[in-house]
Amino acid sequence: MGRLQSDVKVEIYSDVVCPWCYIGHTRFARAVERYRAKGGEVEVELRPFQLAPDAESNGEPTLTWAAAKFGGAERAAQMFGHVTGVAAEDGLALDFDHSIQANTFDAHRLIRLAGEQGKGEEALYALFRAHFTDGLDVGSREVLAKLAAELEVEADLRGEDGAAAVREELAQARALGVSSVPLFLFEGQFAVSGAQPEDTLLAALEEVAERTGQAPAVKPVKAAGVDGDACDDEGYCAV
Image (cartoon, rainbow, N blue to C red; front, side, top):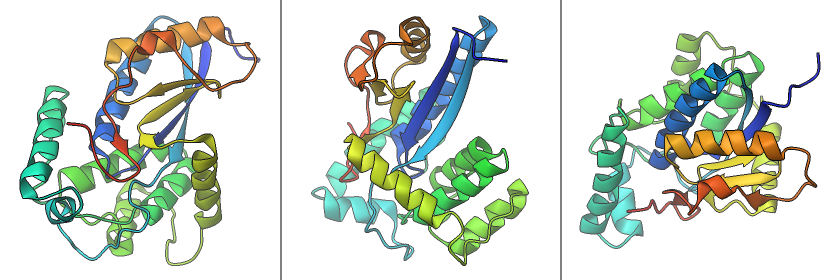
């Protein structure tokens, strides 16, 4: 059976240590529920992005890392205090006092491998909770192995499983010019940047469904208005 006119494919570029990605994914999931209630369908593809590809998973607290990178503890507290308050309004608990900075390459491998087993989004949200709520090091292969077992996902991260595919997708993100996340790419053509409000994301789904079939070109969707809050490729998050 072919796709219906109301079907929309969305690729979401994000990182598991990006608080605005956690918020953006949560809002988008709610928008998808409302879109499906109207009879539409959405196909979601999770795409990797690394805010800090050179980060080391050595147990360093996120607040310590951010203070050194962005001009001191006061600036870091301002950045994380703002996003924590916004997340709470969306029902999400962010605990930066216990969060650990991590290299997320292996976390993206877990998402990729889980996706091949039909559990990509489950893995994504498990990683968000692990990092932002539980204070776990999502760069630790031991931690990731435990999460994989809890998800009942087969993922041997000691070798190279999924590594080549993640490297390729990270390269594709750079080629597309992705420099901040979350980024929602509708039908490979229309881009919505940042953690937009739920109503805006629903409007984007509806608008893209109407516009599908235009010549491919990455362009903004009118419904998005201005860019939403995001974290950039230096790891800095909007305040």
